[in-house]
Length: 398
Image: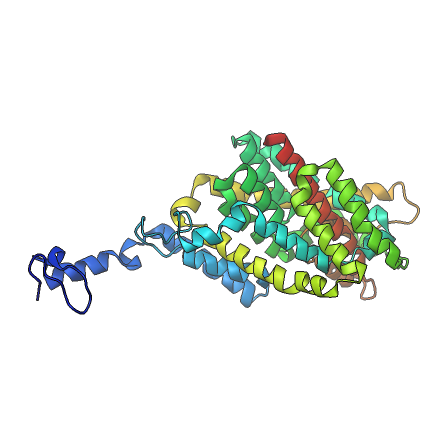
């Protein structure tokens, strides 16, 4: 059964002297202790259940499936137990997952997602009613309130800034800033950000209903004016200059966002625009979601800090929603033509989930009151606002 020292098996070329003295029972035991079944503990089970919940919400409930499906499957892969040192885990040098995770750690994937997002976004509704941009700015208050809360609970300044950006409800922006300031928190912050984005239909409606009266929810918004092609072409050029001069550290995100939008609107590079809004953003989303999910290894993810991040993330998202609604109500004190306060909830940058939820809430009160395009105006300004806030926080805490 065993080879003598120095003897080599002809079929394998493996020196078998190391096997001398071992029995089949010993080898079988070695096989068993190397399996994931033997190495698993309760933490792996918890995270695998979380991954299954994500997959369920994405497939059965259709809550942001483009995000939750790759993240959920990544959580399953990231929580298969293995011996350290085999070059398998996402945190081990030279592993395949480690190389794929490079795009998260450096901010490459979020920037590519912003390129595709810009190529998919029509800013016409925002240009036709520029005052709605203020609601996108107001919704970012959740970021700054949460920053103070995170500092109060003892998080370090860079960690607090990374947690606070969850209030912008923008997953790529949250990952980008966290990669720069607190890379050890990418997993819990990304999962929290994407979880609350997916749970918009659960979180936002009660807040919107609590803060508005039925009369306010019935306010009808007039149709926006027609925006010329020249305005749409000029906007990304002016936008990148104004925003990035204000917050130069937002260049990797906003530069790509406005580039994608210019590709779409200029009308002479349709192939590039089509690629940006389909193949490129889809590829980046797959790798971003999968590797973020895989980064939630149980021994790294399940910590008291992670629980604190989930709590503060919920607070951030709720404050952001409430801030937008309340600011819309304040604006109505000064406007002859009133704004439907529900639109304030679309100021968070969860595109297009929050705009869709505002639209559905309006339809529940009046089946002929269509708020979707107005909500998209607030939504798109929220994307720009959250990226600017991320740039400002990065410049403060770097």
